[in-house]
Image (cartoon, rainbow over all chains, first blue to last red; front, side):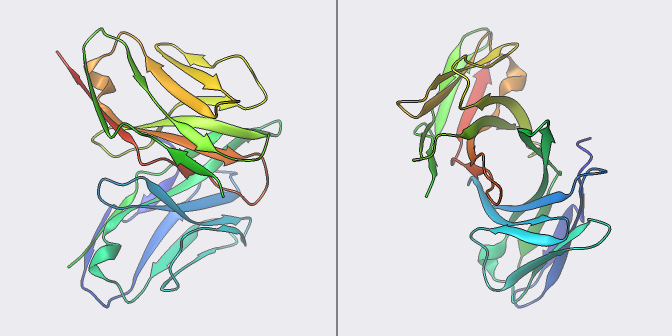
Length: 115
Length: 115
């Protein structure tokens, strides 16, 4: 168990709909990163939050948005869903010690299927 | 912009043999980190090994080692004594040692280990 919790694990919805994916980082971690992994593709960085504030933005569509709440959990909102949005969505926290980055810890992902 | 390239979409190896996965990256910066992640069929992202760019010594973790060539911007992963459990997708990843940046992943190499 990585300590990063994502819910739900699976989600099936229709085109045009809106969904919310949830992520709780490890206890004490202030950062949250969202990634999208389409079928047989690498991970595409979407957006990062740190202690409630947006810190970095990647290839995130305007139909997508995210936020991080005071309790540090984060939600990724996907709207006007298209078939091409079907993917595995990961949340991650960065692991640092003494100013050094030791990597990201990933949640188990949310599998989104748009039909 | 930084990029990560994995030129081998698929590789196969027999149990107990050694295999090397290639990765090149592009950056004009001097301070960064490099990682290899493993994604088995369960789709969980697992950190395999990390390398700090300012360290010339190649990182090793048990059967996993890297060949880090900073001038050539190359970061290959060597798996010794391959095991069936090593079957997975392997991703090379890069991140600048700066706030406001995120891990950038290559497209991955699918490794199959057979008996």
